[in-house]
View (cartoon, rainbow, N blue to C red):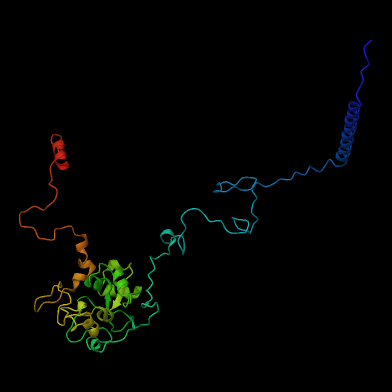
Length: 329
């Protein structure tokens, strides 16, 4: 007869625990069934956690799980800041603005504020910086810039509409006359000169008087008073100017060691007696800058002599290797 199976007390306890757990599950199921029976019309509430946006450029089409911004808060961030659109910004003043968002009508040119060596702002009187006057220099030029004693400027001078009888110069002409290629360094190196940008009406008046060409109507035209140029350069801006004699700052010229009566610019081409001085040599549209753009030889060639350079040779299928080898030597 087989031995009866004896169950340990631990196994019995486990059976009771499993039975109790099953009873508990049945009880919970009954409670859930009762609750479901009481409310079958309301759907279960599912809580959705919004996804956080990652770093980087957002896609063109928003994802459905993104939060839609409330109306009135802008089309960008949660704080209501409008999102910047991609692409080149439109110009100021309408859809047909300037290049890369600049205002329509070309670049703006503001007149430089004059500052002395200590950084203090200087006063401007009659379109020029107010400086101490030299008693001997005042006898050579009047307040409007007209030279006295038979002297004449090496560049063109003119009046401007609405500015009285005061004489002015185009800033590029005295710059070239005194050795500068353009007017930028002219005003940068000589801070006592005051640059003026004329208005549209003044520009039209200069065009009608053939002082500037019609093609300059869209440019910013800078001018400077003739008196201030003479005060700064003295004999160098006068036709046949002689040091100390034709200088405005006489005492400063003597302190520099200038020899009285010596030509201020020995390279100046003076006219023959009875001929007028060529002031157009410093005018841009009369060939003042041709030395920078002309590739012709500076020394005239003899008649019948070919111009230096590469020899023109007709390249054929029979001589192209020979000509290539000769050029490569």
